[in-house]
Length: 115
Image (tube, rainbow, N blue to C red; front, side):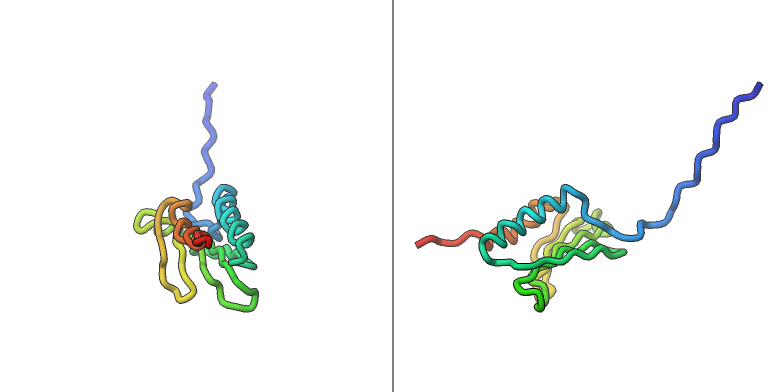
């Protein structure tokens, strides 16, 4: 009697159809979003899951261009970093591997002097 091991299914070499934020990342982003809404700075957001990147866009008003875009680009994870914060004019404000440190550039907007 011969024992035959089953042949495994071939692994797919294709890239995933779209990039998404995981639950932990969304929790960090929505925590900052809630604080900024409470401060009256932000009013609306949009999430896009594309083939190359996942984008969380923040708006002051719905009809405007986004104030900031928080992007997750897996292709850049070994270079500049997986996450980036991009301003309204397209300038990259911060880029890095850790989402919390990248979002600190936006948390500085919450600090105000009290008279």
